[in-house]
Image (tube, rainbow over all chains, first blue to last red; front, side, top):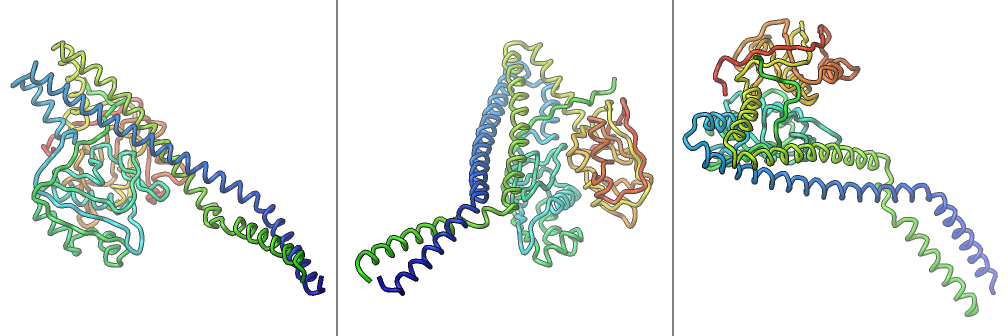
Length: 226
Length: 209
């Protein structure tokens, strides 16, 4: 074997040894990868469970709605007591609402949409006397809080990411004109839109349907004062 | 170089290639602690949400059972509906309510954003019924400013702002007062707060909803 070839094999051997060592030192990192894979599996399992739970909840709500109609038909036809119950359900956001309105898309621009942007916009929409509002099909109800958790936004206890589709039923002309006129928007929202940190798109809708709140109200501490 | 040497080098290169691919085939960003934390956070959020959904499912299952009985029994159905109606009247601000909770005062100027963030924080901590400056908070309540004055649903509020919240009084108290809690986050310094076993919150007299 020529000397040059021998030297080449020696260098190669050293290099392979180096790679072996490097590979061995990466064990910790490989463990991290294994953990990440486990994390991914867990996230997938939890996502599937969440889908299943949501489907079951929707199914139960439909069954309860049918039972409720059945009760109304059999026992409370033209009953004032039942009408009052229906009215209070409507006011609390527990029934579907349809009518003229506006849809807004609020999405990430050069920056990301914050929970505070959504809170400010919802507050502004209520001030314009909106009748019903939803964000990504989550009905805004009395107990709704909008919070930032990690890189997602929690609405009614469920996590969402940009883009956010906001449906509003109410005075279409006033809501559309006021929100799209940047001069009238709340200052922080206006500034973020002007700086292109976030993007707000609006569209008038002649027939808009907002789904009822998919959760249920359970009061553990409050009682009607006798 | 004879054939044996060539085979030797060839095998060494194959081994080298294999090690290279194993070493560098791993996506480096997956190792970052940020990715790990982000995934852990996702698991936490998903787990919490799923727990809430399970509770919701349980409540609905019980409700379904009550309704199923109610279909064949008018008295039971009236009772079930009355229970629901009472809850709805509380939520819609139609009745005076009592229960344990917290009562606090803020004796400094507040802007509308601080007010909605405060309200959001209370809801997040599970407040069931809230009044702000003597006015019951409703589904469609909103804040705005008129000069330095804080306005709630077109009612001008005066300092000190008194806020009452019915719910888990310890949880509500901690969520407001702990370091990094709602008071800290909103820069509220001139405050006084107390827990109470019995808070009364009046109904809304106007027909906002």
